Length: 289
Ligand code: FES
Image (tube, rainbow, N blue to C red; front, side, top):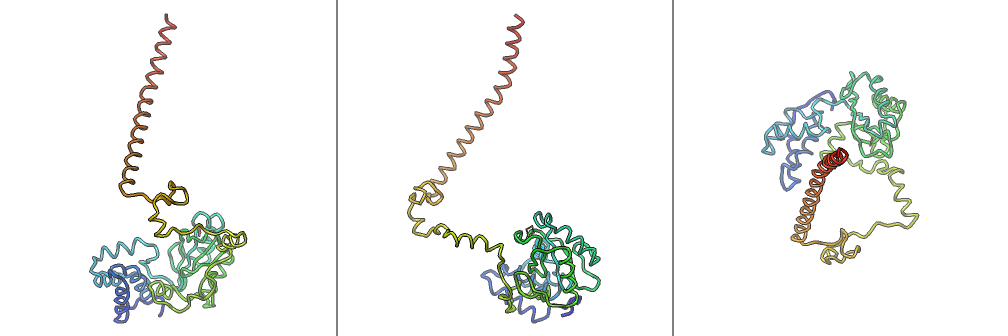
């Protein structure tokens, strides 16, 4: 599919939208994947896409638009072949994310949320991607590119624009943003196991725990929950179950204690200045005497 083209939502796409609706007990729960599917076909969430989803789900177009404009992964302007996200959130920014964005912006001659003249790359500042241990990171069509520099980022976009193969640091080979959107909609492309899914930094804690024989505390079971006030903490820790009326009583007691403390504090606050003033007057009075 040519990236600049916005084809209509044909019968095949409508059938897939209906298929997504059938995957959930309540059809409206399918709205998010349906919007991803619309993007995979049309390159953005178009007005036609909003109206189609609303019609199929029995929602208003305002309700669908509200969702499409709330989440940043839904785009109202047509994306380029590739979406390049530069994390400029705190950690990535101090590790070089701002410098990477500036270099790419100059190199591609586009600003934030703009697409290159050849339609190949849409550049966007993105928020933290929970990949801070690989900062500074980029995403290409939502796949991670770890430990980037301004130079490696320029090389990356040049290879994308040249149509050269690009392998994500922890994910599949890069294809296109529309392909990735189809996967996000819930239509697998069979490439989920391409490339590593976890990097060394993420696995460091696991490795140390294994070396030292550490393990996580046991997960509470239903039987544990039924053994009231007999948890590992001797009945007073978070494991101890409480009856609803116990919880309510605890809450009432806590509120009453807080009220008492507040009243006492206010009394002290009211009395203290008077004491000071009165004491001063008295002392002054005494000194006058
Ligand atoms: S700040 Fe960039 S991934 Fe967290």
